[in-house]
Length: 193
Image (tube, rainbow, N blue to C red; front, side, top):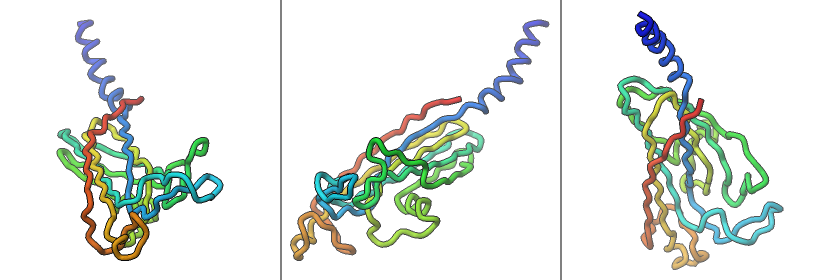
């Protein structure tokens, strides 16, 4: 009888403990065009290296709920750099610049790409053609384990130089073809209480 009561108590307590646990996935993003080959100091002086080299960058964050039940996901968006403005060069820090969330259906999948990141960071406004470079984090906090994969692509902008522009500049609406890079990263989650 005592063993039965212990098992019954565990059956009642464990779901509540599991529900209190959360999983966190931190995903780096790099989005947009960087047409500059130079950086900017914290004092606003042009010089040094840019936050990323000149080119066109895209990130898409794939999220899969392989569970047989819905999973709630909270998203915090951090903006570390935009154009040549590095907003959080150490020792500076930034709070989340945008928030979003979703209840992902059982066996459902979704994606947060550069368009969605721009919308969240800019109050729902759609991105312009060739948006400026933005760099930051999307931090996902979920009620259960999920699968998160980030896909990063980068293209070198080349044709503008042949048409009188500075070396490495991107010209809107013109196909680029010098090089393309793709990287796929599985993002590991951390369980927190």
